[in-house]
Length: 209
Image (cartoon, rainbow, N blue to C red; front, side, top):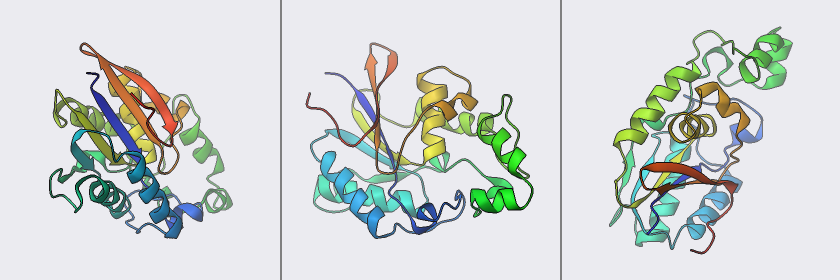
């Protein structure tokens, strides 16, 4: 049987809807985000995962709770949610809580572009480097989930893509910027022997096996 790691980006928050960059901030899901969490939970209801991991941020935990409720009939009864700080979002430093328009209005537009697209990237004051976040992601990937069973991981847009880049594709962490993972969408990693492969990216549900 193919072993799968299913990565889930959390549902939307009001800050996401407003275009604010949030990492350490801890808003709850908004109404649409809660609907998104329920839809992704339904999509994963038949997945035989042995573990559900989550970032400790509320938006991720609420999404993970929806998945756990649908799978077990009660949060954490049979497949507990395991919070892991290594899944927390990439630290945005001085960009935290600000929109792109606000960043540009403050005269940091060139820095923003160099952070999002630059080779090599530049970072706002206090930000976590992509490589630092990659070390966290690789440590989680290497140690956390079961070796012989499916697992579900709920996290954030940057950090989950960084995990895919460094741990699955064997690529430098900045190349995560070439991947896309929208709110409440899935990425699926499958193994052929010891080798992980990115099977699906940015999909709303799993295909039938």
